[in-house]
Image 1: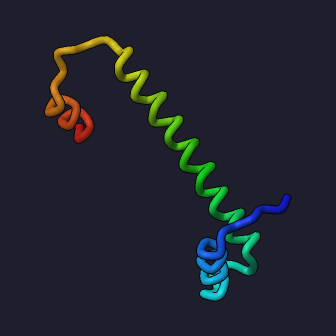
Image 2: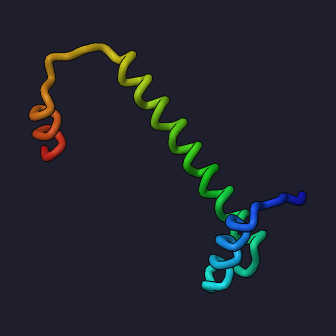
Length: 72
């Protein structure tokens, strides 16, 4: 796969490599893509948890009750 970057973005990527954290621009791009993938997966899990919370039944339990039960 080949990608084209504007000069400003290429300079940014080259600077990250020059800092020594990455062995090449390709390594830097792979890391960005992995982080993006991790973020998308975390967002998906959060959205599923929020959906489950909205779909759960209402109770009279307060946040103080939950904290007290957790402390046990």
